[in-house]
Every structure is written in structure tokens, then in C-alpha cells.
Length: 125
Image (cartoon, rainbow, N blue to C red):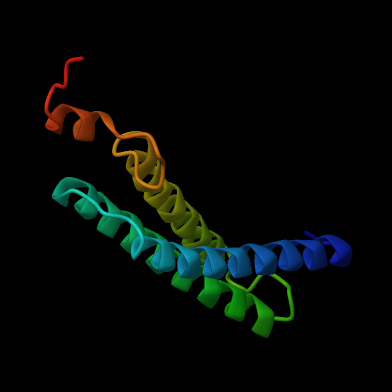
């Protein structure tokens, strides 16, 4: 943390990550309009959406805080790091919901989910 080059690299990585998160939230909101969901899947989607939006807002605020301090970790850095760790944990928790949408409910795939298949009538040939 005492090398300026590492501090600069950390700031750029963080900045690019926040930009990627903003773009991801935007594209996710657009994708939400293109899928049809069961009530249960819709509830999971809402949880996924809220966790990702809130964490992105917090990470953006942390980037602004760090930018004001000219790329150096703000003092007290323990508070900054604790908020960052909570925000990253929130991203991970929200990503769990995103995984559920794809792997449990088949959202965004051409493969019907197990829940959808069980709701379809049994067709025999």
C-alpha cells in the first residue's frame, strides 16, 4: 500500500469494476423486460435486482470517496475497507439469486426449468 503505482492500479481496477457493474445493472434491467417469469421466479428476480442495484450504488459512492482522496485509500481506511467488504458480499449474495434464476428457473435460456417441466402436461407419443 505504500507504492503509488500499486495504489494507482488499484484505483483503476476498482473504477473499471464499478463501470462494469453500472453497465451490468443497466443491461439486466433491459433483460428483465424480455423474459416471462413464474411468480416464484419473479420474487427471486426482484431480490437479485435489489441486491445488485444497492451494492452498485454503494460501490460507486466508495469510488467517489476514494477519488476525492486522489486514489489513496481514505482514512480511516478500516471503515472504507469494511464498507467495501460488505458491498462485495452483497454483490456475491445477489449473484446467488442470479444463479438461481438461470439454473433453477431456466430464465434467459432455451431450456425449460424443472419447475416449468413439472407444470406442463405429460405428453406421450
